[in-house]
Length: 124
Image (cartoon, rainbow, N blue to C red; front, side):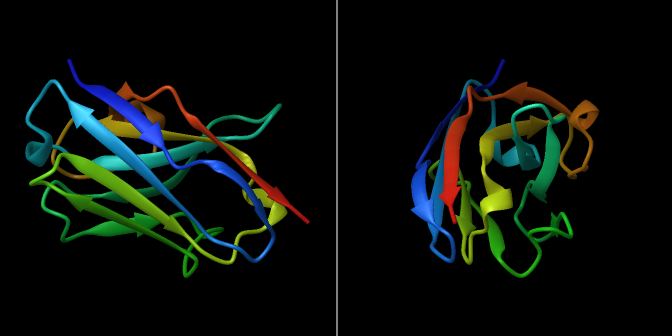
């Protein structure tokens, strides 16, 4: 069973940047795709970005495309999310997720491991 621990959330002004990190343990990190999801108060958890097992393929939600960049370091078992040009609508709890396979999906059902989440608050 995979364990995921997110870090890097916080309060930032609109237009600013944050970098989230996720440390993984418990299974072979390099075999599985990884993703980031977020959940705002009163809303369902939504897809943000995903990356394949080898980092060669990435995908993004339209709302973050061009502003966020997902990355992974298989030598360190870490996943990253660089968030630039942040907007108030990016405010949410962000979750790191481990996929069931090597190739990423955009649905929560594609993932079977979740971190505890880290809060990102963007003030306007």
